[in-house]
Length: 107
Image (cartoon, rainbow, N blue to C red; front, side, top):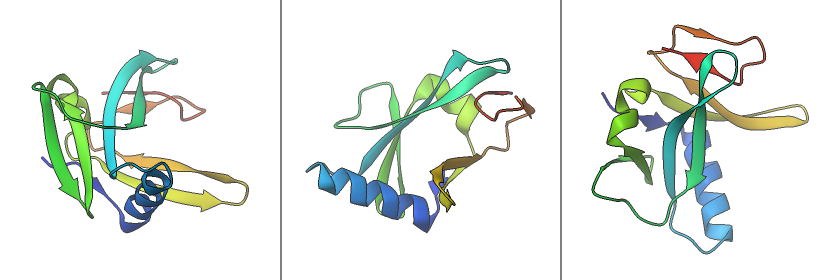
C-alpha cells in the first residue's frame, strides 16, 4: 500500500523545503510515545538509506524506513490551517485508536 500526500500537504512541504534550499523530500516514521503508544515523526530528509522505501507523491519524495511500513501503509497526509492552528493530519487506515489530544495512536 502506498503512502500519499494531498496537494495541500505537498505544496506546504515544497515551500518549506525550498525556503531552506533543499529538495522536497520528507522522512515519515513512528516512535513510541504518548498514552496510545505511537506518534508520527515527520522531518525533511536529505537522502534515503538502504533500509528505506521511497515513494513519490505530488512531486515530493516520501522516505519511510522499512520497519515503519506496517504502521503507515495506506496513510494519506494532509496539511490544514484552521484558525491559528496549522499542521499535518494523518488518515491512517491502520489506526485502531488515538488518545484524546490526538498526539498518539495505536494499531
